[in-house]
Image (cartoon, rainbow, N blue to C red; front, side, top):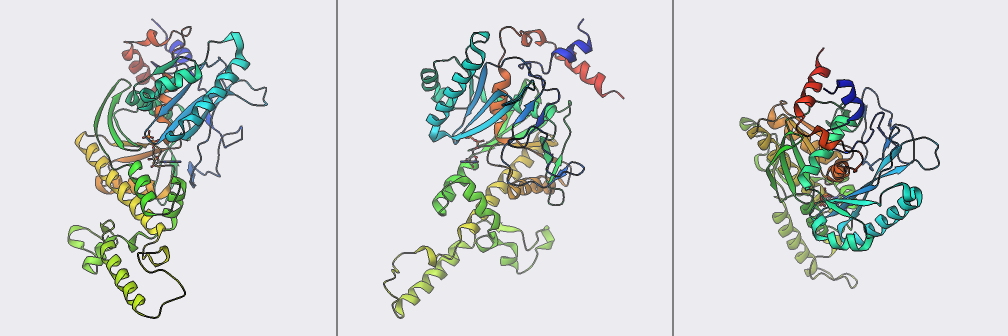
Length: 432
Ligand code: ADP
């Protein structure tokens, strides 16, 4: 029988490529050291985070594949590279995204990776292959294969999300964190016993998965009011041209200018049912009345002396009573609150107390994480915990990357059906 030590030494995770993650850490952009961010006891102040690479100092084997997760809004790409200008062994996992509309740019980038792989490894390696997941793995399958002239392997989206999340939770230090206003980014150490949990993936739309094991999951729900909704509606309602602009606007907006608050209706708290005056009673609930008032004021002004050539038919930008920032914040709250509440209800129905939030919608944005985290804490009375990830948008892409089983490694099959060995090994590790 295989010894525990042997399993430990040779197998990182069942059913996945053997990436040597020993000593893996997240690097600051362009640095080779672990990201510290002035941390103290696992606490750091999150900024609007850019995705840092993951350094794998002990991985020396040639990696002959890259992975893409092609979603409705974004293409997420993960690839392995050797350290540039370094004699160190190992390398890093790199993370890159493109808008799905610009898939051509992504394909060009993958061509560069393919050529570089060939130049670096030559005949020592297999030809580069592309692991693809997400809806676009089907939609753009021929395009990618024909453009790159390499093998493209498709992997199931939900399986990849789970494989990616499991990898981050169990293997990468300073990846998973909890969020609260008083303790904004509290890292949770990698751990082995992780099931069951609820994964709430907030991409263009939202999927909620109940996960009870590496190969055991069920999509229990979701909502179409997700990241695509925020992105789409804000592009109609504000002048913002990019998602980053929208998040930046939301940061300093005041949602009470457009939302109807409990205090607007009651003049005070509605204590009997536990609603503070500052709670949102109706997202965008003030808009109709304020719009009428503004139009009336404008009509009155138009009756008065005419200003130098200014047009007053229709609303020009300056006369709008609503600022882009207020609208952005209001909609961000509306979408996040809604997802937080549905996530709580799903976790309640399925008796799950760990809730992981993934998907590019989050983008490390404080108000989003605060809203989601607060919703879970509030509704569960502190019994359930919301978790976030630094690479939240890359769960599917990393999962696809890990699914690659090089022919000569042959380990995936060796563990099939040996879940009990894994369970036994975990039990051994957790015994005092
Ligand atoms: P999908 O796989 O459906 O594309 P993602 O997890 O990639 O989903 O999330 C897409 C969502 O992320 C968008 O709908 C938007 O809300 C948000 N987002 C984050 N960054 C960007 C960006 N740079 N451009 C567009 N949307 C972004």
